[in-house]
Length: 232
Image (cartoon, rainbow, N blue to C red; front, side):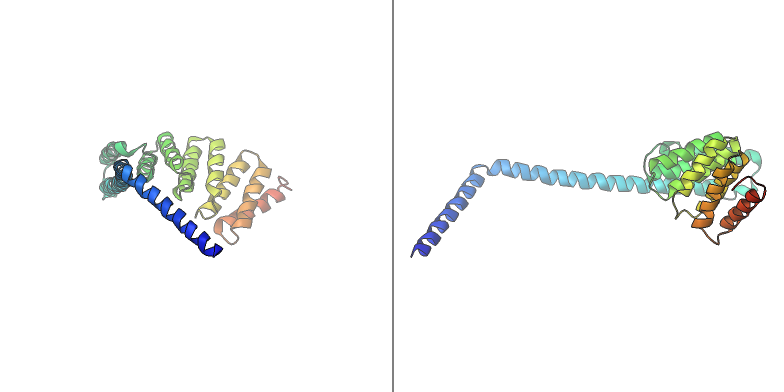
């Protein structure tokens, strides 16, 4: 009997609690509906923003592809003056997309960097490669950009920066030119007289990319340095 009384009392409490909730909803139905409406509008707004961003990125990438296609079309048949003019046109067209810190900005900076490199304006090319790398350090494009930044620094004669950028490019083992980056790092260290640093870079190429052509070249440089008494 006690159990039945307890059960009955609990049911009465449940009904009472439910009634209170229903009364609260009835009393506040307008505010609650307003809140629900606000939440729905917020969700829709966020969805619209993402759709706009995606559309903007696609539009930007399509525009950069079009710029690249126009720039590269039969450009090997152009005279130097014609090529320079086409480069100017491409760089002007890329201008609105440079500085965007997303995939659009990365692609724009990389294309601009290539154009400047072809012009042998290595300082401008270097700046654009570094911009592209900085927009997304974790992207697969970052080591490509650092490798090319190293090549620009090499051309300018800034061996210290070149070595630093080659090292940064080589940090990602899945970078397809990592062994080449390590070899170049060793080459620069060797040229500057840092033979221990050169051997370290060469050995890393040998250990990480055994059988690779640049790993083989690195091994040969280690042998030469040791034979010349420049390394232990």
